[in-house]
Image 1 (cartoon, rainbow, N blue to C red):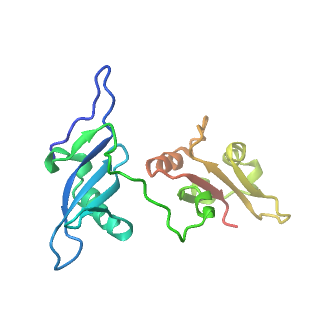
Image 2 (spheres, rainbow, N blue to C red):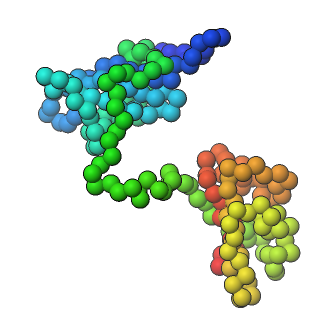
Length: 200
């Protein structure tokens, strides 16, 4: 069992968000372990940056090598949850050697315009409420339409498109009882958006 380091704060103390220290890592089969120095954001469980000792100096670890190191530090060993076990020191400041990852020369400014990927889940209403004639007379559909952030409806065909997207970051009230299990499951799985449709 890991011996977790407490990050609680008392009055007048600043929360220790980061952790830093040395880490020995094998970057591939048949190779010797490399001495690395790492910095972890404990609050987000992310390996922020790392450097490796070349024999003459420390150099930044980037790209696939940084991902490989993170897989060992965070994914395999849960070092962010057991700082004492790995001699990692909690700190409120980033180490002096820390540098933000540089933007690749091949990257264009437009790549930074897109937000982080979101998770979307689709729900067919017939699976929830069973058969019905027209959606605009169904209480569940009326509630969904009133609370939707996006809609795709009224395409001029009987029984045609009737789709609504709800943003799960919003606060919803008076959720119909038949829909409550859907929203509870979506929150448990950290779904960003729900799309309700009728199979068309």
